[in-house]
Amino acid sequence: MNKIEVRYIGPRDQWRDHLYGSGLHFTKDQVRAVPYLLGRRLLRHTDLFVVHEPGDAATSANTDSTVDQHADLLSAGQPAAQDNGQGDATGAEGEASDDTDELLDEAERERAQREKEVLDLDALHREVDQMDFQTLATFAERYGLKLTKQKGLERGRAEVHARIDQFGAV
Image (cartoon, rainbow, N blue to C red; front, side):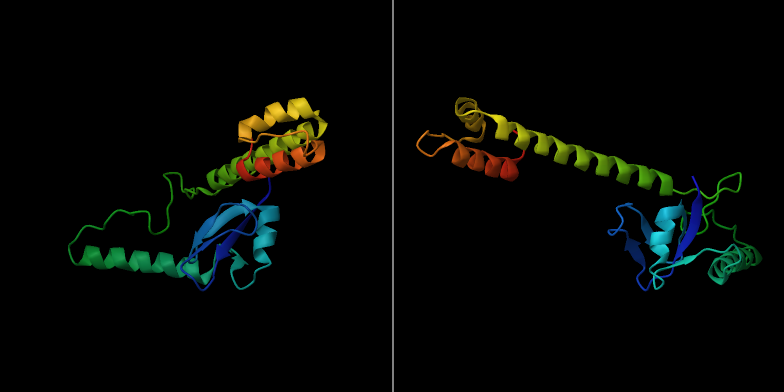
């Protein structure tokens, strides 16, 4: 899958995606390699995202300040502290440790679960539409409804549909 690196440059310290359902969250100047189509959508928001270029000033400034801090500590006779995950997180092989793929997979699983629930409710509604009065009256008891023939089949179906919408599948 093609990926594109985007960097968050928005005004807030943190940003969470609620528009595109990716489940991603960004901190100031954070770079994430995201699928190309999601990256293009994010890049539409020019006030929040830019394409990350390896020589960006923000990235090199962060690296330079980290190097300067380590040099200052060493010159003062103190050992340089290990990276606590706040700065540039790199693995032993130099690859960035990134949770983007896990977050995208989790968002996809949640979306699939919501879609399955909607499809199950739609199937239940279609099933109710096919029931005769006796079957509908028996089914309505699950929802605490007592249907009478005086109200009629259509009104009974409407009441059951309302309960399904209110309480889901029982």
